[in-house]
Image 1 (tube, rainbow, N blue to C red):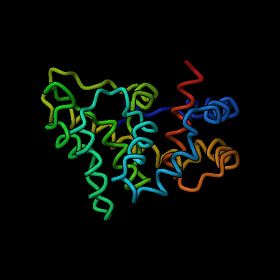
Image 2 (cartoon, rainbow, N blue to C red):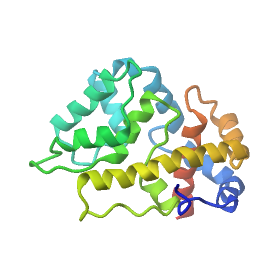
Image 3 (spheres, rainbow, N blue to C red):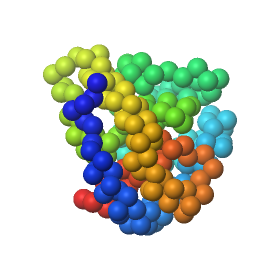
Image 4 (cartoon, rainbow, N blue to C red):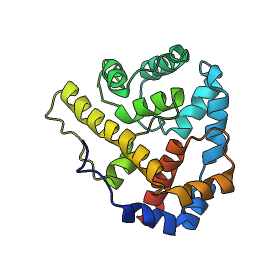
Length: 208
């Protein structure tokens, strides 16, 4: 499954060779990438508070997506009510949130934001966004498909990400970069999966 998206070792070698550029890019980011993530994890119990939600939306880039107040309210309710460890898969969550208009009665499939919510509840889970899509050459499901069909394609890629990150970790393909990241930032809560996500995200920024 997902062989069409797998990257050769050379793709990860490029990250290892450019790790200093990548780390400098992460270090200069706003808000601070590592310390803000650690704060969000440490204070997840405060998810119902306005300040927490503002910082969450800024970090995970929900701002600018044109999300309605009702959508955001329901989104954070899902996050709050799942703190007991009963994590939804992002496909189910995406379909449930799709029923809520984001603005002017327009509905939109927000799969990326759903993977971010699920990751906050289980940091071993990957995150889907445009940088992962580009790095692994995943084609966004067409709008001619039904919502369930589009979600099914997103979930196929998402399951690939889970398997691919395990392959990267088991094979030590980014060991040098993960170690350098840890030494530079001393993160408290970033899992190796989140570090891989951060490395690919930053590599996409500096390599464009």
